[in-house]
Amino acid sequence: MFEEYYRQIIRILLIKKYKAIFCGEIPPIYPDGHIFFCKETAEKRNVYNTAIRKVTEENRNIVWVPINELGRNCYVDSVHFNELGNRLVAESFTQAILAR
Image 1: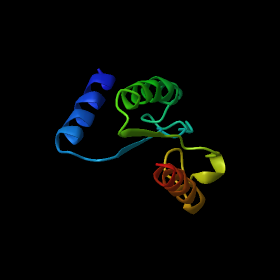
Image 2: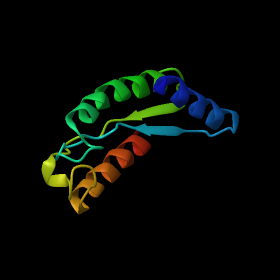
Image 3: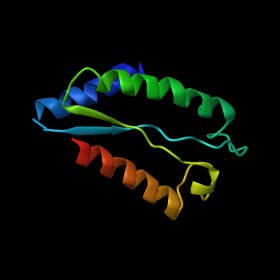
Image 4: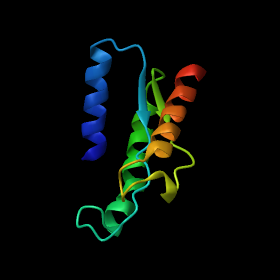
C-alpha cells in the first residue's frame, strides 16, 4: 500500500512537469519507549525505504538520496534531528543535487 501511494505522489509530480525529484531515505528511528516510535516502527523503516528506492528507480528524473552517518548523536530524541543531524541531511541532499 505504501509503495503504491508513494508511486502515485511521484506520478503527480511528473505530470506537473517537475524536472527533478529527490527522494530521501527515511532515517533511523531510535526507539525510546514512546508508543509511536517503538521497535516495530524502526523495523518497518527498511520496508518503506525499499519501496521508496524501488519507485525512484522507475524514472531517471527521480533521485534516491541516502542519508548517511546519522548516529544517535544526531538526534535530540528518538526521531528529531539536532543541529548535527540537520546538517548531515542537508549535506546528503546537497551532494545528490550537485551530482545531478
